[in-house]
Length: 270
Image 1: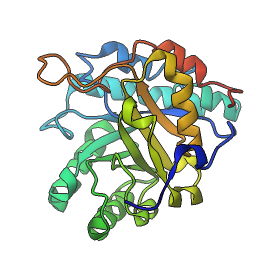
Image 2 (image 1 turned 90 degrees about the vertical axis):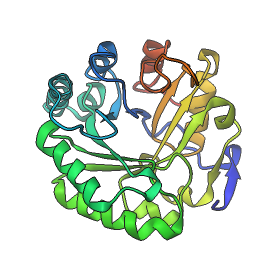
Image 3 (image 1 turned 45 degrees about the horizontal axis):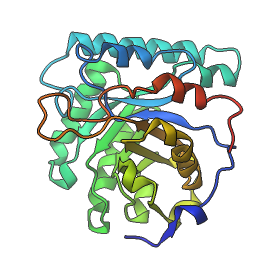
C-alpha cells in the first residue's frame, strides 16, 4: 500500500469543491424503475451512473435499458442547454458509463474492447467504468493500453477505474477518475488516504460506502471531503450474504435518498 495518512490529516476541500453522486450501477430498470427515474431528477448532482446489463453490455440491445439510457441522455442534454453553469450542476445531467469487468486483469483485451464497442453502438454511452480494475504496479501497462484504446473510441468520454482501494500512483494518469474506496461504513470511518492523492483535485477520486446510518451522513461527507473525494455514493443498505434478495448494496436507493440529495446542494460547506 502507498504511503498512508489518517483521514484527519488528509487534504481538506473546505467545501469549495461540490460533491456529486457516482452510481456504481443500479439493478435492471425493470427491477429498479424508481432508481433509474431518480437519475434524471432535477436537483440531483449526478456526475455519472453505470449501466450494467450482464457484467457488461449483454448479448443484444435490451429495450428497457435503451429507454433508461435515453432518459438520462435527454436529461443531460437539457442540463447542457441551461442558461448558466449552475443550471448544469442542478439538473440531473450525469454521464452514462458502460460497465467493463476487468476481473482483476484476467479479461482478454479483445473481449473488453468488443464489450466497449457494443456499449457505444447500442446505448451511446458517455464513457466506461472499469470494474475490478487491478491496482498493482505490474498491471499498470496493460491497464494503460486499455484506457488509451478506449479513449480513442470516445470523442469526449469519461473513464473511471473501479479499484475500490488506493492503487499504485501511476494509475492516476491513465483515467479521469479512480474509485479509491468501496466498502463498509465500519471500515470507511477509520480509513486512511494515500498521501500521493493530495497532488490531485477531488474530481479525480470517488468513494462508495454502504451501511452508512442516517445519523452519520454528515460525518461520512466530512470524511469524503477531508480525503479529497469529489464523487460519492453513500447508502444505508448492507451486503446480504446468502439472501435470495438483491445482494448488491449499491443496486437500489438508500432510504435517505431525498435527504442526501438535499444536503449535497449549492452553498454546502464544512
